Length: 332
Length: 164
Image 1 (tube, rainbow over the protein chains, first blue to last red):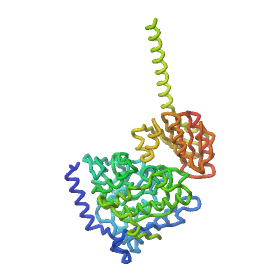
Image 2: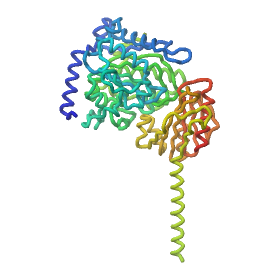
Image 3: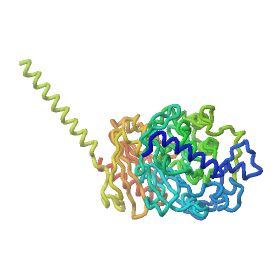
Image 4: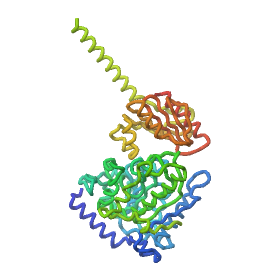
């Protein structure tokens, strides 16, 4: 068990190591056409991701992932691209989201596709941890629980536990972080699933971090604002969660975050980037477009616009940008 | 004489209160979940898990607040499978009163909802059924849309309704 000082020190050291070794910031570095002052977000789509019977095609998911990563990094070969994304010899966490149950959770096909590419890029199976709140959430994603250190590990906060010493930022006080985040992972790839949210308006990249704390409901006040922004500004979250591969393969445009099949929709898309605020801004627009298409009131009209996105971009948080003029959106 | 009447009145009140509390406990402990085979084609595939208002977030974090504000007392849930293939989840929310159940039902009503003849009121979609009966709010969701799904869900819902 680490005390508070050791925990902070370890977190800071991890951030320094990642900064020098992981090559993130790669969008601007690798894509010579990219404007370095803009946050790059790739939305990759495949209308045939589901077959006519509604079954997800795993091979097409892999291909879609490769296209998204290639577009983001400017590297055609997936393995070369992934080597630029992940550090070697470090434990990589994949934070999924199974809260909504079987019908609306991060798809296993996406998780497995990422695991395959990580291993091809030199990450050992035992250096990959797929995690969420608990076994139920992980099983909802279609994943199998495993603690075998020689294989890809998959378990929840219910197994790993939480830090004794709380972290804090702004109004988020007494936040006890999952030890998977604070102690076990050097870098986290965020794998949220796009959903409407009764309280927050939209849940995607930043809101997925509610699954790394012990008592997420304590951050629900005022439409999760500034709870979402404050949580993401806590150093361990800000520094370790550095890349998002957002699952917009399926989504619920209303009634979320639970599974409401009557509001289910298949954008057949992945949303990729490093700027969590820009990603959530784009995700919000995707939800709004769908709501408009089916005649559901805007989130503003429903009195739950995701105000936490602007808060996350403000001078106190500086987590990214929600300014469309500063987002380089690539739709492929 | 007055003292005797007062004593008898007190005893009657205590008896009525005790009876209603007992009835309330029974109501809240009702096993609404049909056993495997009780509804043709349906198998109960998990244990029933029960949450109260304080820990409901563990099951439906983000959704819990609307149930709490409508007076949820407990939520019980169990998984089912139809003819070995179609998976579904049954949630039984015991609210404080019928008004709370009605509030949640109306919140779930949208323009494509069809009226379902279940309990005191019900609605159905292609892959889900929601109905209320007294203080109970039942939601059944299937994870796949097949030609059999609506009929199978309705049959399971009647099975649940009969146990409330």
